[in-house]
Length: 337
Ligand SMILES: [Zn+2]
Ligand SMILES: [Zn+2]
Image (cartoon, rainbow, N blue to C red; front, side):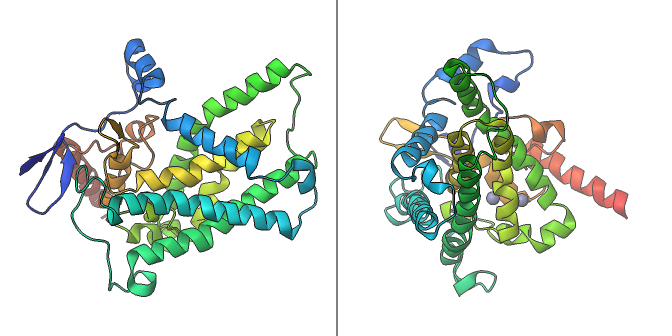
């Protein structure tokens, strides 16, 4: 084993962080108020930069890169085309940017990188026998149109008064208060929806027909994040249905959709942390989901909420967690035999 920053790499070239994965401190029992406040308001923390950054992207998108809502009352090719082109550009910039940063420019070398294995070429399970090209095509040619379709439907429904289903009165304070509540709730809605959809996708029939495609990526890179079967895209992005029912403003729906669209780039980066400059290290939960790709039967959700812990599928990356995962699989096989 060789020591690197905050972790160790074994002879096979696999790196793992020294510390086991911890859930967000809001899950601590007994409650840890100081830790929780630091986690929420500190830097880097839950609000800034993690979620504020995505909110800024959403606001820029809404203000400068989206046609007026009134213009979207009838579905017309020009504005659908605008949304499609800008979504293509956004995903290309983010997913492509991260790929470029980590794997082409090699901006942080192998620091915090889980494996030294290159992306796969020559294997038939990938289109063009090339993992990166396969993943890019599935993201840009399949995920982007599906994201756009959900967005088109959202604006069209808001523009025609089919959404914004209830009223909280005329007070702008209450209206924008509810808007803020929905913004703060969005990462939690995302976590719960992702967990449930993902558990469904691991039911044998769904797995075989749809989700196995995503798991062809054992070692992952940013482009693997949305490399999914179209049916999985439809399930995954259906998180937008929650703000369809609960939100009064289309930006809440756009933010929900953006979290789902953008978070997988970082959670599949193949690196535990993204280093920005010398000091800032962004830990976007990549280790949590990396273990899911490696071992399949653990970590279906994320570290924001205790869902995996509650259902006994949490793997914190430690040897003890690994032993218990193997035991769980053995017990299940015995029960099935
Ligand atoms: Zn899975
Ligand atoms: Zn994944």
